Length: 289
Image 1 (tube, rainbow, N blue to C red):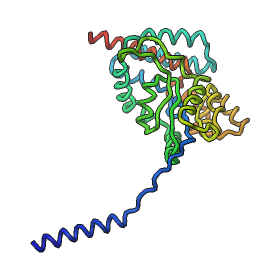
Image 2 (image 1 turned 30 degrees about the vertical axis):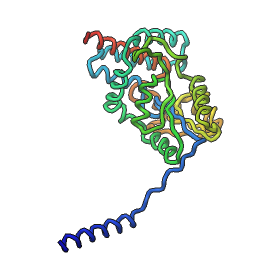
Image 3 (image 1 turned 90 degrees about the vertical axis):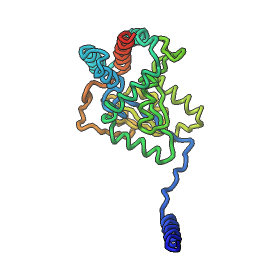
Image 4 (image 1 turned 180 degrees about the vertical axis):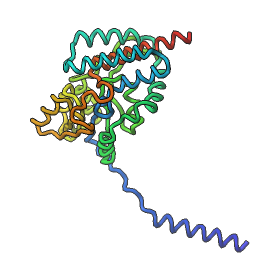
């Protein structure tokens, strides 16, 4: 009994000594008026997030490789042209909305989580991820801002440990997509308006905020904040950043990596990805009914 008591006392002393010697990591002090906003496609990850999603669906046999290649070629065409035709965007948007009408939101989210882990995680730029983490470590909130559907954008943000995501919002009713958008695509000036609205809601001082993008299409958002950064920039944004003396971060292996891996999505390309995903899911639902 005495031996057991001595062991218990010795264990207690050892525990007290270990606790006293422990060095606690300093707590992160929240910085409530500053935040960072990151574009996704070719800024946070290589290529187009919606394309990677469609690729994951193709791997599950939900649509054909030919469908996937048509989508990739369409993205390349829009990227090489260097401009976006409003008529093409409107037509693609109408088609995408028609295809997703009736699909369950929960199913899209579940597939998005699976496909992120399988296909997208390895395509995140380590350098951009480190920039986002630096803001988190400084107590600032970090949001993704993208034309990608908000459900997929939220999955990416959650997997990266970020605060949240602003994305294109599709109308839903009873857990399913109605085939209509709430507002419009989150692209160009719409991104800046979303950031401005979020800043009002969260009490952010935009002059203390940062924004990161690869595309000149995001100049409205970049120009809105006090600390804009060009990340893996296209030629137009690189030139604009040089003139304004904005910081440039390029994590690509070559300066001319415009079409790295598979084509980067312009807005019309991203919507086309929604079409591909919609076709795939529609076929899937029909096959199980």
